[in-house]
Amino acid sequence: MSIVASFSAFLLDGMVRFPIPLTHPISPPKSTFPNDPDIALENITNGNLRNTRLILERFGGSVGKFSSIWNALIRSFIARDLPREALLIFRAMRRRDVVPNNFTYPFLFKGCAAMGDLKDGLQIHGDAIKNGLDSNVYVQNTLMLFYGSCGQIASAHHVFDGMSLRTVVSWNTVISSCVDNSEFVGAVEIFVKMRDCGCEPDETTVVLLLSACAELGSLNLGKWSHGQVLEKGLMVNCHLGTALVDMYAKCGSLKYARLVFDRMCERNVLTWTAMISALAQHGFAMEALDLFFKMKAENFVPNDITFLGVLCACGHGGLVKEGYRVFHEMKHAYGIKPTIAHCGAMVDMLGRAGLVKEAYSFIMNMAAKPDAVMWRTLLSACNIHNVDDEYGLEAKARMVLLGLEPKRTGNLVLVSNMYAEDGMWEDVEILRAYMGNSGLKKVAGESSIEIGRSVYKFTSGYDHCAEYEGVYSLLNGLSSHMKMIGLESNT
Image 1: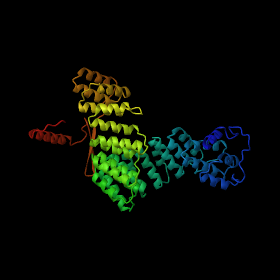
Image 2: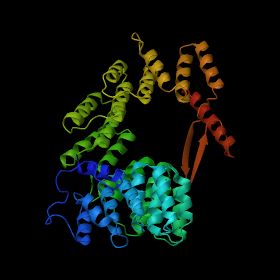
Image 3: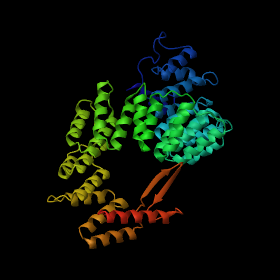
Image 4: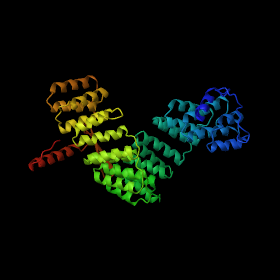
C-alpha cells in the first residue's frame, strides 16, 4: 500500500486505530523519527510525508503551536497535487477540535478550485465564517479563486465587493475569474476600476487584460495594454511576450504578432506554439511549418498544442502529405497520444482537400470514439465537394451526427440546407416543423468591426444600428457595381 493510500485509510478510520493490524512496533527507530515538533514541521515542509501518521499521533492533538503541523500537512499535499488527501487531513483536524487559522483555509480553497469541488468548498467557506476568518485578505483571495474555478462568478464578485482591503492579487484574481468564465468585458471594466482606485497593475494583470482583449478582438485596447507594458518598463519575458503574440494574432494583426515574437530575447515552447498557431489561423501554412522546423532546430520540444497548430496549418494550406508526416512524428517520435482535437484536425485537413472517403476511413480507424464535431466536419466536406456518394458517406455522417446531437440547431440547419440543395423539399419541411415544434431556433450570426476606438457588432436579422439604412444603401450600391462589371454577389 502506498504512503498516500495508507494514510488516507488511516484518516478515514477516525484517527483512533490503524486500519491494518500491525504485528511489529509501529514506531520507527528513534534516530529516524522526529521527537521535536519543530523538526517534524521542517520534515513536512520539505515534502517528507513518510511519517505522517506518527507525527499526527504524537503532535497533532496539540492546540496552538502544533496546529502549524496540520497546516504544513495540508500545504504539502496540495503542493503534491493531492487535494483530496488535503481535505481528509482537514476533516481529521476538525474532529480533533484543532482550530484552523488564516493559514489553513487558503490552501484548502486552492485544492477545491483544482478539483472544481463546489460542495466541499462551500462547507469550508462556512467553517471560515464560523471561525471569523472569512474577512482575511489571503482567505478572500483564494476564496475568489475557488468560486471562479467552479463557475460561480457572481459569488466571486460578491466576495470581492465585500473586501475592506484589496491587494493587487485580489484584483488579479477577480479579473482572472472573469476571463476564465468568458466575461471579457467585465474583466476590462474591473481593470478600469483598479486603475481608478490607484492600484498599480503588475505583469499578471497585463497578461490577463491581454487575454480579454484577444477574446474581444479589440486591437486598440490591446495596443493600449502593450503601451502600458512599455510605459511601466515591464520586461517582455516569455509569459508576457506569449500573451502579446496571442493577442495581436487573434485581433487580426499578424504583422505585430511576428514583430513581438522576433524581438523577444527569450522564448519557450508556449511562445513558439502561439506564433505557429497565429500563422496557421491566418492561412500562412508554409510559414507555420518553417517556424515549426526552426523551433525543433533550436532544440525546443513541441507539445500537443504545438502539433495541433501545425496540423491546422496543414489543413488550411492543403498540405496533406506534410500533415500525415507531422501526425506520425507526433505519435512515434515524441510519444504524444493523439487527442480528439488532433484527429479532428486530420479529418478537417482531409475534408478540405476533398478526400472525403479518406477522412471517413480515418474516423472509422481511430482509437478514440469520434465526437459530433468530427462527423459535422465530414458532413460539411461532403456538402462542399459534392462527392460522388456511391458509399453513402453523406447519409452515414448525417445519421450519426443527428443521433449524437439531435437538438443542436446548427446540425439541423446544415442538414436542411443540404436537403434544399438536393431538391428534397419534403424533408426540408419535416426538419423545419421538427425545429418549430421543439422550440429550436437558429442561432443568429454575428460579426464585428473595430473603427477608431469603438467596436460595432452586427447580428443577422437585428438592425440595432441607427445608421443601418446607410449601410444597406452602400451594400446595394456595391452589389449593383459588381453586376455592371460582370460579377455576381452571393449575399
